[in-house]
Length: 197
Ligand SMILES: Cc1cc2nc3c(=O)[nH]c(=O)nc-3n(C[C@H](O)[C@H](O)[C@H](O)COP(=O)(O)OP(=O)(O)OC[C@H]3O[C@@H](n4cnc5c(N)ncnc54)[C@H](O)[C@@H]3O)c2cc1C
Image (cartoon, rainbow, N blue to C red; front, top):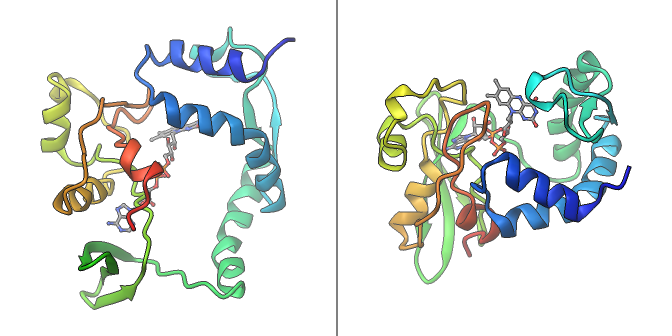
């Protein structure tokens, strides 16, 4: 089989009806081999196999699937402890609600489920909140037929990231891109590529 970067780029662009962020897709594909190795190092190995999903039956044999789903869940749950052991902090049940910005980014303001307010000093922040498929108004703005879409996606993805970026004057214009499965908008360009400094 002859399948490399070019075939993957063309195939995914075509599959998504050209609703892709080309620059982001290019970077993703360039890193994909290294990411598969990283997944293995993290205890989340994957192997190529034929997808059982009907939409992918005729795809080239490049579909990666977790080797063992039960093991994957166990190893996934171990990741926060590894991250903490490396000197980092993991906050669960905590949502970023605002950014403090004055002469550059100063802090992320967050709130726990119990209502406790936190201020986390930070010079850079990556907004990776899953897009805005959980915000019906933002969806309606970008998709005229949003009321007819069945949202299977993450309801917590309420567009906080894009709203905070817009509040700071970031260019949040984008071509809406949604997944075949999650049917939710993903604001990709500024969130992923340009971490706010
Ligand atoms: C039913 C279903 C099946 C799927 N099947 C597949 C599949 O087989 N293969 C495949 O490749 N993809 C599949 N996908 C798609 C895939 O899951 C998503 O594309 C992917 O998870 C998106 O990753 P993400 O990091 O952008 O966002 P997410 O995985 O949504 O992560 C965003 C995280 O940010 C958190 N968050 C949101 N707001 C805040 C805030 N203000 N503060 C702090 N945290 C916040 C959310 O709780 C969430 O944990 C499927 C999706 C769905 C819904």
